[in-house]
Image (tube, rainbow, N blue to C red; front, side, top):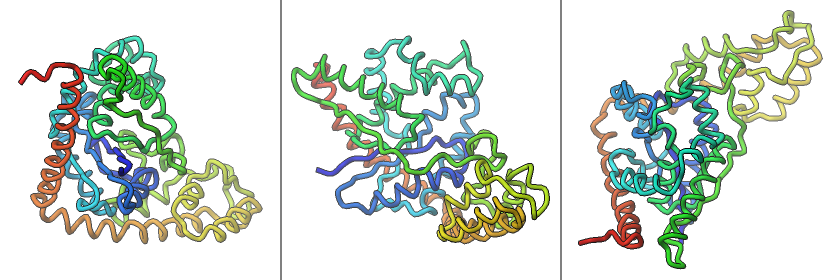
Length: 336
């Protein structure tokens, strides 16, 4: 039996280097493992929970995210890439799961609480946003995924997913586990900070370097990166901790020994910010240029890209439909 992995992204903007180092790299490795089957979801329905008044933004970025996936190296022959709303069984399963969780449980979820605070929802939180963990439970269980790539901040979501699964099996399973619990695949990479050094790289804050950025855009953003405000002159000793340039060099520069030497020199004094920024510019251009060229080629034929998503969604729908048949049988609502 293959291990099933489900992961994805909300189509609210193009993907940035944080997505690449945090998830895309591992997805590309997973798709080449013979004992894994991977589903990658473009979560448009979830994106609409806080973008319900701007559906065109979500629609536009479905294609943009798909382009980033393919340009980065996701292969539709190895990975099923699909659109969430194109698989109606997910919404159907979500509806049944809503009966297995209370409003109080959802409000107490640390991940939901933090995101509500970040978005300033307070008492005006959309119900769809509040029930995000239930929707995610439907997404995961519909494909019987057992391994979910997440960051540590998403662990409370998976705990709630597994609570729903256990409750479903307890009520409807009659001694059998109809649905499967899942476990996190934690990334070994810490979250990439934004170029401003004040927060994580985020589409909403527009403080990241995008996979589709031009060479000039990369140069401009790197030269504006937060370093050490006390490192005014080249000969001044500098701080490496919290220095965004070194954080990015640690993440993307393959020459780790050379980076350690540069860190020691920077701490001692005698290494300017411009020098390390120029090195980072070269590293990032070498990384992203091949992806950008593939992306530009793919973007010339958007119908072909959407066809890939259509085929992936059809495959995903077949798998989810089989799960729904088992769920309805267990719930004794398989009337016909």
